[in-house]
Amino acid sequence: MHMGNTKLFEDPLIAPCGMNCGLCIAFQFAKYDLNKRGYHRRYCPGCRPRGKNCTFMASHFDLMKDGLVRFCYECESFPCERLKRLDKRYSTKYSMSMIENLNYIKQHGLNSFLSAQEKRWKCKVCGEATCCHTHSCLSCDDDLSTYRKPNK
Image (cartoon, rainbow, N blue to C red; front, side):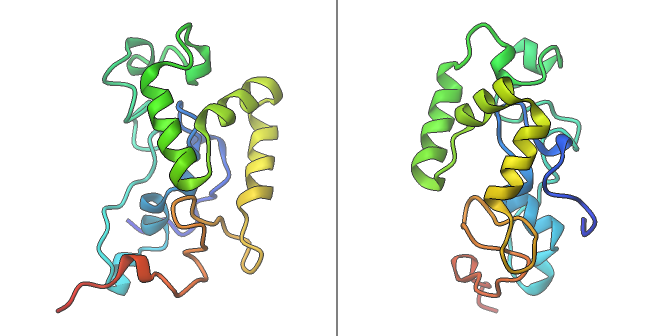
């Protein structure tokens, strides 16, 4: 599932919860097919590209599951407790807030959000997106020591 031509800052990669799937390590491992380099991690093409409205919320909320809302901020219970827990984990561990992302999209629009994401997350060396989980560029950074190759 090599996805070498996939742009990391585009509309289909923005999940309903506010996550930019293009910044996710599972998405980037697939894009760069890093398991072929000896690493072992499950690949993910993103929520919307694989036909899922949202992997974290859809099973709990009919509006999301049925595709009646594009983003969580369109729901009357935004931000719900489930999103708050997810946001707290990402804010604490990865310095990224899905709720802030959603509020930005709501106030400034998706195109402005995509531009802001590119400015924030674009690798200064190669121009690809850095990974929100490692804060490094999986395209040009050979130091993937956090994801060591298994002993053979």
